[in-house]
Length: 454
Image (cartoon, rainbow, N blue to C red; front, side, top):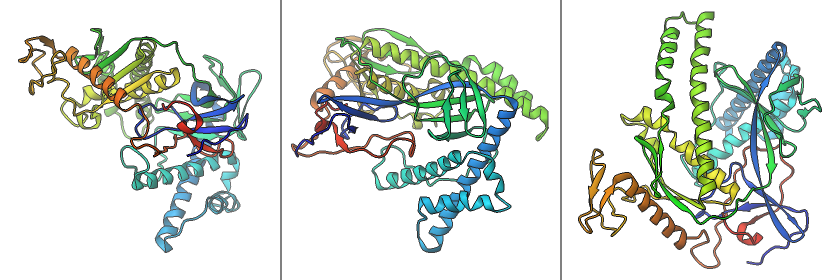
């Protein structure tokens, strides 16, 4: 296949083969400058915002209107499909549930909020249907997605998105939202580039956040020679192949007493009363503290591993299956899935490699010295002696060394290119949002653009 020619300033989107392991938070894009390809990535920067009482009422109204538009559009599409298996175009749907609905007495209050937020709800519905059909056809990896469902007004988490037409950043640091006003933002750092959209959300604990989507340049770190394999567990969170041990912080277990007391107080309140609403907020804030501490710890630990190692290898754990066992609370508290996702995202930005080893690898049964498979061992056996070479192993340390060796071999044998010569398997990088970026640009694969596969 011929390599396409790029013009300076032309944006392209990077595709990666199905064999590639690295992922990015949103999706890689790039621009050709002087014949050299410069990759870029979209990231989210979240900040706490402090709306006034009047702005909170306006935000609640916007949340409700966006939910109603989403539900009306979903009901219209379901009705059209049941009637004659037809699909209503997005433009016609927007005219029906937004433009024409504002002229009716039942939906006249839709005119009180920004139309940009209402249109974002329709884009969310399009994305939900696209994800469902891609999952059914096998184009979307991972667990099968279901059909979009109606949103409830009793949801404790509310969110609405504004595109470039619905918000602006003031010179005084305030965030101006259409038909809401200038909202105070707790800026902890500067945005690296002008944001393309902002999502305003309210979490169950009553806090408000603004999440900006920005385009940033990758920050590759200086190459290092160290590579490490990691064996994740519950007694110790991670045992590294170089002998280091990361203790399990157990954030939920440490806060269990406070959570239990708050939930007991909540259970004694009358349903529907104001005191029950206050008690529910206390429970949500206690859970938010645990979640924030866990998320912060995952980011710090992943940053340390990415900074110190050129490649990190993990085992593909069946977290969803382990979460249905008697260890469910400890598995959820460990958040292995979040740790892996954060590690992969940081590695993709910093030019590091994260390799995932098959879950069927007998890492706890294989000797890391002579590679004899010694058979299954119960969990209480933490130290064992190899029958082949007689080496005494620590169970977790040996498993991490086996994972390191298996990951290095897999990376050497399958560097990310297609299996058959001349065959390409493109895979589109998924975007966080739709409709808020510039018009679609020419798409090419990483091999066509002359850059290495991620």
